[in-house]
Image (cartoon, rainbow, N blue to C red; front, side, top):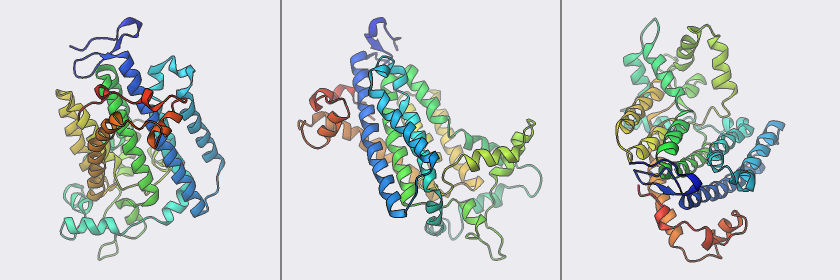
Length: 366
């Protein structure tokens, strides 16, 4: 039975029925802080290098986002948030949102390099010369009237943003050890995808069709972008201007329209399922069902190719399998003054690597 948090900081809610000692929770929390710091430094270094190579000029909005991101990185290590670890544990979500927002400054340069040929070519190999979106829309899209399937698919699509927060909250309240591991995997997965979006910008089907790259024999686009109409139908029924809200939500707010490969809309629910299955019960089965439904939705709407989904699956598999191995190797590493040990010590307020190295007991098994 899962025990509630004990007074005096003796223990917090544990994972899979075991209470998690407060000291061990603190080590896992510090581990995640260091992981975020190191990976974010690498990500920002890549952004700076790309900015120089592409001749990107800093704009006020990018400067503001960068300043807030720097604050979010520095503050958790200060004593002010160490007094409230529950708040500190959620900072990586803010860091990921800001890291993705920084891509906005590369918008024109990234769009100009958008690849529109490679992924549809691979998809045609998989599906006998056709695109999966084309096939699904031919089979299920109504000739006239409201596309109920597109409306439902749009709802599934929009669950992408709150999904990591909801799953994280569930694990945080019930299975704290899994929360730390889930958050670490989420950070690695997301930053790897963000880097890919900059290094290999890939256009989604709707974008390629809209700009004349996916045309049929008659010159008409092979696929339609179903989400705008479905979203407008859903929102207008509530008395809101659906067209204007769609332009704001999916146009102005989105920093990168050519961030299709790998698909995080496919990767996030799969990652969530892999962690929830370690808990078992109806939540895991519900997440598995949502995962397959979301994959169908993003292809049917024209937001992703099946190849994008396969890319997301590969990214999740690599992170889910290799990250625990990395943590185990770090826990056995006796070199405390070289390599990663120096980096981790520097990002932990000068503590020695031996003092901050996670113990084998804090590492969850996949």
